[in-house]
Length: 180
Image 1 (cartoon, helix red, strand yellow):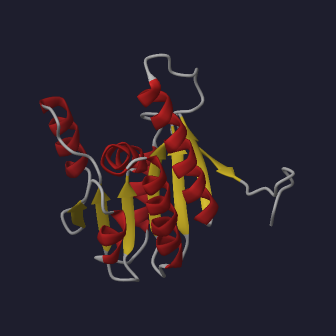
Image 2 (cartoon, rainbow, N blue to C red; image 1 turned 30 degrees about the horizontal axis):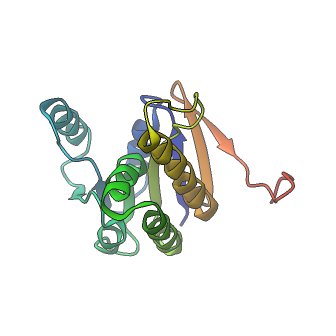
């Protein structure tokens, strides 16, 4: 089964599509949530997202150890990982840039090797201007871009979501030629 990466801006429909894809397949679903409730507003967001999932789905709250969380799912289960954006921020703080990228590579390879459908949600934050509010913002933006590219490279399918609409993204070679 494929590894599917859903990427786009905030509130672009990524999570809604991930939930729909998971509902439409027949395997048990394991939902991996990377968010942490650092304040009341975030706690409310997490609670609202939890209500969107069927009670039969298993939820694993894991802000850092993605591989361990994925390994908790049976190989044929559908895994929904929401999201790499928050995981990258957590990992940057806990592990640093190089180790975060290494974890992303290992986990993306493992996710791609699963027999069950794996759906991964992430934000695209690099389409705007270069942040001027400090090196940490620029480091995070650059790291997330690399993490997204790592997962996209491992994925069978990648969709860019904008305003609730999905656009399939094609793989290209080093010269920009489309690959099959």
